[in-house]
Length: 319
Ligand code: 13P
Ligand code: SF4
Image 1 (cartoon, rainbow, N blue to C red):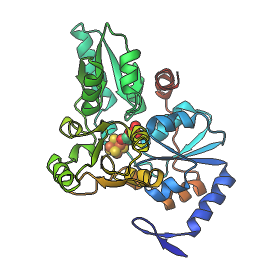
Image 2: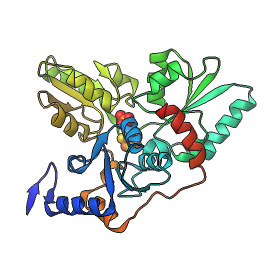
Image 3: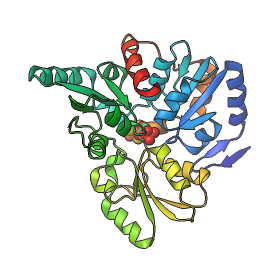
């Protein structure tokens, strides 16, 4: 039997297949809020990057299927060396992680040290393990302000990598000056202020929420700025049904509609299209989830840099 899901025909048998394979393989499925709604529905745990990284350390099954992008599955493996971590599509990358290769970061750090500057490297979790291994702190959109404000020594400069927009947001929120790596997310960078204002004019009294990966011209139009978990909490706190404009990846609207259905959600359009879907997240499909459980691949293999990256991740996210 087939049914129409949000954007595709889904063979219902695949849900039973995935359930059976999950039991056979002793697996737990984790899914990020940017995954297709059908994948979020079959997941045991959904969340933002911070919640999922923490949840991965509490999973009791032998296998984790990580429905998200590579750096997320890699993080789950680093925090759980003894577990098998599967990523439905090994090519599910991230423009932020790709834009900050470890050798380039190492060169920049060496240059800054050569100039006699004392700094801490604060790295967004959207980065490779090799970059994390070169870092002093790892942050997510959910804890970046708190870590920079409360934990990064105040007598040193901060080199913030790889998202210049999140870095600028944290800089404004904490008052700490930063050296910003010149990276951005391909999804959050393309929202159109003109379209946002046009939509707002059409929806009088609407509320705008934006992810801190958005550029400042979008953020300054927002009533609320926060990561995906914070967005959920914020809309839950609004009692009266409202029109809410959402400036983040399109699948987040599925989560918001599912969890807080009293509001009407509208995607903020992009400059060139209205979709704002992350092409990397979209590589994962129900079929690939089933297939990775069937075959045990693709699996995140242990790498040397995971040891050092693990120390930084644990002290930054779990303490
Ligand atoms: P959060 O899940 O922390 O909100 O981050 C969004 C993101 O871009 C993940 O890649
Ligand atoms: Fe990376 Fe942006 Fe996709 Fe998140 S939405 S995984 S930051 S490319």
